[in-house]
Every structure is written in C-alpha cells, then in structure tokens.
Image (tube, rainbow, N blue to C red; front, top):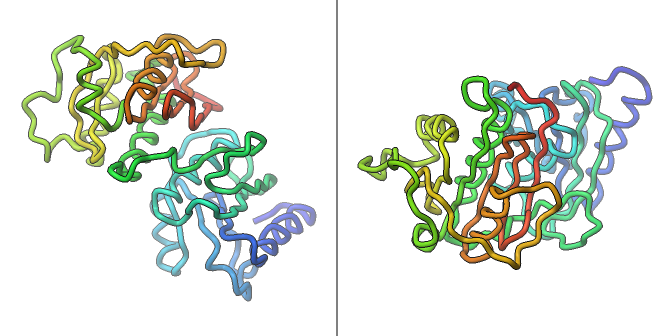
Length: 294
C-alpha cells in the first residue's frame, strides 16, 4: 500500500487513531484499501468507511462485510475528494451531526496516503477546514437525491457537453415557490412525461440532465427527485446576497432563489467547472475541479 517506511508509519498512525473513543469514523478515501495485515486485529475497524470510485471495489469490500460508499471518479484535490466522500457517507446515513471524523486521502491514484484531516460534522466553527454538514436540509428533502445531483453536476463540470464546457443551475425543493419565481425560457423538455419516468435518481434522467445542461436556464427538481422543468429563468435577485468576487449572474441567481425559498441550488461554473451548493443564500459546499476533460 505505502511506498516507504515513513508512508507506512503514517498510515499505521492514522489507523491507530481510529481506536480513540473520541473518534467516531475513519474515512479512507482511496481505490486502494489497506492490506488485511494493516487492518487485522484492530477491534475498532467497524469505524472504518471506505470511499471508492469503483463499484466493483465497493462490492468487493461489502462482500468482506466492510462499509463502503461510492464517489465520482474525477481528479479533484485532496480536500475536495474528502468533501465529496463526507457527503456520500452522510447520504448513506453513516455520519451524523456531532460525529468526529478522521479523513485519510492522497494524491493521484491514492496509492500513498499523505493527508489526514479531522472534522466535526455540523460544526459551525469558521476555522474548520471543511464545512460539510447536512446542508440544513428540511426533513422533506431526500439526501440521496441531493447527493446524486451533486455527482451529476460534478460530471457536467468535468466533461461538459460534446467536448465544450457548460455551466448550469439545478434548483432542488420548494418547487411550487421556485416555479412562481421563475419563467420558462424554452420549451420544457420534460413536459408531458409521467412523474415515474422523470426522476433524477434514474440513470437515463441524469443523462438527460447532463445533455440539457447545454440549454439556457435552470433545472427545477422536486425534493423527491422528480424533474419539474428545464430551461427556467430565475427571477429572484436578492440584494442581501453576498458572494465572493468573481462569481457572476448564475451564482447570484442561485444564491437569491435559496435566500427567498427553502430550496437548495447547485451551480456548475462554465469557466472553471467548480460545483457549488447554495443554501439560504450562502455557499454551503464548494468542489473545485483539479483537471477538466474539456
């Protein structure tokens, strides 16, 4: 697993910290799980959660009664990969507010682990390195839907459409209010399709979202994943929204609609491919691309 004595000692030290009573989970973000000899005999290995980008590896781990979650196979920075892994673990019900989590990650293909981050789920401390709580989702939201759409947004940011970079907005939840605060720019490509056949949890619909992301306007999606519309122009433009320098109209619209409703908005930057999640008018999660494929 590790290439040198220092790397092996680093890994063993991280695994040893897992035994502390004040550590609830160790998130191992890599497609190269530690060898059985590095895990054997550790009574707290039940705290270990693997975050892998291969469904085959995830199934192998689960067959060995290990806990694993899937993350998208894109080349993000270490901290971004940890953020995505935390979101996936939260969606799977493996993390809750107040949990202390150690996250272990590395560069490239993660054969060598060189980064260990400690975070508290739900922390409001502005000094926290990673602030990835449950996004303050109301109970009617499906975390599975939100996670799935974040992953779809990451694919759009990394791949674009037909080799061209695209940007888009996906608004989830409070769909009645959001529809009232928006207007149709183009013919709605989802109009006339039954609800059962236009749910964002279905792979064909996620592919359709990726395709239609090249169109102007936002996607409006219900809390349960049903796609209400694409190509909507968001009319909200709150003056109370404060965004970092360099973010334009797309991000301002996403922040404004979440400030004026109970919705969550996901944006993909056409310029950089960065994915941002907005909640209550603020950026709740930011995932920067390390290397784009467009």
